[in-house]
Every structure is written in structure tokens, then in C-alpha cells.
Image 1: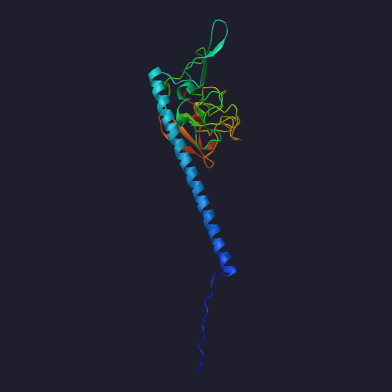
Image 2: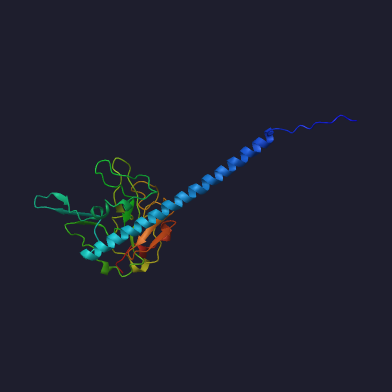
Length: 240
């Protein structure tokens, strides 16, 4: 009789098999990280859009109660020439609300000095600009004949610490309030809404949500824009 031959089972992985497993795990990790990153970005963008809608509700209610939209900055000069804040501006109305901070913004939390939430949104200065001693007159809701086309609020730029931006402007504030009706369908450019940077004056409407920005209009509906060219002059001016 032939002696029985014992077979020995190979234990463990070969080096090649181990490397393949490691490579598969690495690929799956990268895919998972990429998907997770996109989901977080999408969640932040959705929260930002919700914030803008809530802000629009508050501002619209305030405008209906007062008969005019609140200015971003409201100041008056007393008999001695001292300039003071009137306390009825946009920041006074919205500044303490928790939904004024965009989750996609660089700065968040409370201002280290004033202990108010650091905001990341801007107003259309053609609707809510600066007002000093009642000049220029505040804009009334009834004056805006195209509320579904005119921007009310949008993603806004921030300054860095220790003085991060409060609610400011989402377009260049020094422009005239009066647009030219013949240019209603002309695309906005960096002359109206600078966007060469992200966190300073040169970027009043930053595209911080995967290269996009959120905008809410005077009628309360919101929209995602992929660039300044998605907006037209009729979205900025209300006077025609």
C-alpha cells in the first residue's frame, strides 16, 4: 500500500492578495469620503436656503408693518452733529436670529466683542440701502411691481476676525437705485456684484456652495445661481 499523503492547507494571504485588499479598501474609503463631502455640502446649502427664506419672512413682515423695507444702516444726526444708529436697521431686526449664519461660511458663532451672531448674508441695496436722516427715502413694498424678479437677500461676503461682517450688501451699494428699463435683460457683471474673491469687499455674493450661491426674492421664493451671469439687471433694480 502507498503511504497516505497528507495535504496541508495554506494559511493566511499572500503579499499580492494583501496589497489587493488594501487597494480596494483605499478606493472604497475615497469614494465614501467624496460622497460624504458632497452630502455635507448639499446639507449646508439646503440649510442656507432655509435661512434665507426665514429671513425673507421676517423682513417682509417688518416691511408690511412699517410700510417700508428696513435699511441695512439707519442713522440720524442730532443737533450737535453727532451721528447715531437709529436701532431700526436690518441688523437690529435680524442680527440676533440663529438663522442668520450660513453653515457654509468661513466665520460663524458669536462676535467676540458684541456677542451677536456673525452673519453671512447680504441685502439688495436697491431695496434696503443706507438711510441717514431719512435720505434716501425707504422703499415701500408697493413700489416693487415685480417682486418675483427683484432680489431681497442673498449669500453675502464676510470680513475676517476680529471684526467679521454683519448683515451687509449682496451688490455694490454705491450704484444708483434707478435702473434703465432697456437693460432689464442685460446680465449682471462684476461692476454690479463683484466676485473676484471670497471673504472681502471684492466678493459681495460669494459662490460658496460648490461654486453656487443662494438668493431669495421679494416675493419669498428662493433660487440657486451658478454665477453672476445667471442674474439680470431686472433682478437688481425695481424702479420700472
